[in-house]
Length: 438
Ligand code: GDP
Ligand code: MG
Image (cartoon, rainbow, N blue to C red; front, side, top):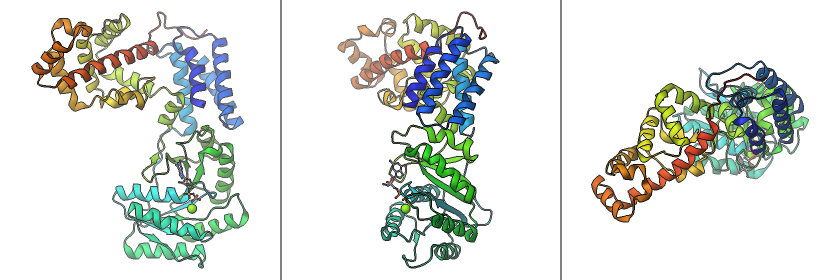
């Protein structure tokens, strides 16, 4: 996948204390190939790589990062920029109802996304109305009605014998009368772009004057999605994109090219068929997902802001010497408490995905328990947990007012953490010399 390929090429730079221009070229060549293979637009890739190279060579030296990490940070920044820097929210009309017009090819996910959006808005205490303007497939209205029922949002329809433009108008009137503050208009798609479809949606736009014209695109179609976006945008001047089926093994190219080709933001991503699987699009999170590094830079920043540096250094030394003990573990957990929810912090450590986190479910409330358990251990046990046999476990459980299962769980978590710390340690090795690129 794109993510794996980028990681592989950047991994080679990761631990380096010094990076030559040759190292950089080699890595960037791989990055370039990975992007092209992921179906990212050729021109986008070209600009992207030359921007990174210019920045890396003119390297801003960040004290806290080694050169390898700096290149990764630059790639991360540029990836984020490519996708639009920040989350773009929906525009709401100051005079309700807000009109959201959904458009896109058949099968891209318009109807599903209309339902997801309605569900989202309902959770924000809005009163959305879904309007069924796909009159070409008899099943389309029924599909929207089913979706509406599932999310508890009313659906306005007039059957298949009425012009979609009139349905849209009537839908808005209905919303005004019934106090619906958002109108989501689900329209018909065709298999390919055709003039009739474009004219119809263009007329609906002119008549309804929408606050949002959301183009729904199937991420699995890669570069085609970008072409579709160009055409729709030219005709309709869309306000944003919803990229669906991001849960599938899309090559990722669409997300990376869309912004620079259309200059329009991706506002949401569809992460599955279920109606609660629509997420706001965060360029920075997407960039870190693509780089497969969790929000590692965020971690570095957060860590620097709230860690007692000396303590962190001590800890790092211990981790390196593999003398990390349960006392340190407790310390670590307490420091992490200041950094925000534990799971959020752990997620930012490279190599830790939600899969690993499951085995390491440290919940804030459990911290109290953990503390009690560790405090019930002897000094010897804390520094060498391997000696904690079943009779010791029993004693510790009793002493801390917990159960043997709790003690077992903690010891397991400790072991896992030690493993993860090793990983983190590999990434965050500080080079002896903080050099520039040569
Ligand atoms: P429309 O023709 O544009 O209205 O598309 P539909 O809403 O009918 O969706 C077409 C198919 O794509 C359906 O089977 C949906 O369940 C599926 N679909 C839509 N969005 C997503 C998504 O984000 N992830 C996945 N896996 N499937 C989706
Ligand atoms: Mg549909």
